[in-house]
Amino acid sequence: MNPLKELHNFGQSPWMDYIRRDLFASGKLKSLIDDDGISGVTSNPSIFEQAIAHSDEYQEAIMAFVGRGDIDAKAIFESLEASDIQNAADALRNVYDSTDRRDGYVSMEVSPRLSHDGPGTLDEARRLWAMVDRPNLMVKIPATTEGIPVIQQLISEGININVTLLFAQDAYKQVAEAFVKGLEIRVAKGEEISSVASVASVFVSRIDALVDSLIDANEEKSLQVIKGKVAIANSRLTYQEYKEIFASDAWQALADKGAMTQRLLWASTSTKNPEYKNTLYMDALIGPDTVNTIPPATMDAFRDHGIVSNTLEDDIDGARNVLQTLDDAGISMEKVTDQLLKEGLEKFVISFDSLLKAVDTARNV
Image (cartoon, rainbow, N blue to C red; front, side, top):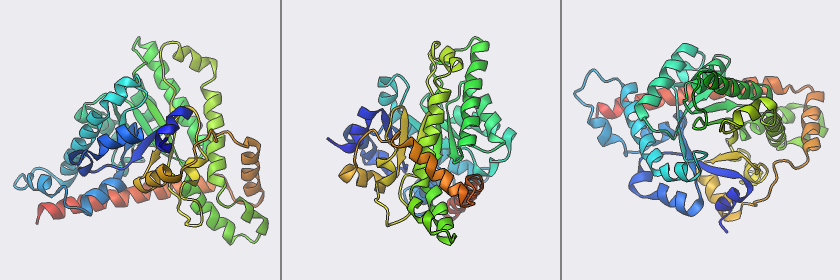
């Protein structure tokens, strides 16, 4: 059996971390849905920057805006993006319906320049939700201090949210609490909650990329045995937090009214270190009520030689020991995750500015 499709048997939904216009024209997305069991699509500024700045697929659509001086590059990009997101959402609508709204989502990110602007994020999320006008849209909000109350507010308004750039377990708990509180607010207002969906996107390989470099710079040679293990340990322990939160009495009261859990989504699951198996993070994080959003190259690798087994709760004590070993050596996971969040936001800002520049360049050809 295709390992990608087999993931569903273990309660994990494979989504694709990629979007561009040729997916729809070629019928590629439909075949990924039918043949590989792909049940969602995620996007981010880096993905769109690659699509727009490094291909000519959007040139004709951009040129349609020539002569309309009142349209700036951001507005043009949003129009292009919304069209792609709508096409992907429509392609996944049958998945959304057949899974009773559990899967079939497409994610669209607010401008990364708003990451520390709560009111701006709130306004843009509402605007994008209305612009795309699809029930299987998820608006992506970063897990910044300013973003967490926005997540609660948007959930209370019935807007589906993909919380992105999660690294720290403490940040995850705040996000999950915001989700639960948002649903409780809806219930208090007499509004339904069975259609409100959310995922919490925990980034994986970026943790090892940074921690491994810190281990190599540390004189404690015994740390070498935990290289390539910290990201998996962090993810497995975050899943334990998930299980605890969604086993509570407070959650059960919401579940009785039809609420769906906010699933953990594993992001950044391609390996950054060529010495590691290229399906390492997929093989190690398979378990119930989770999502893995997969870039195309990793998807091809997993289809070819992925190992499908219920691995997410393997050796939880060992996971705790890995993080304790790191802490004992003076490497702070809090500092690591704070740095990764900052770097992730900066990377998306650079990509966002680059794609806007590409739109301007294409318009002025």
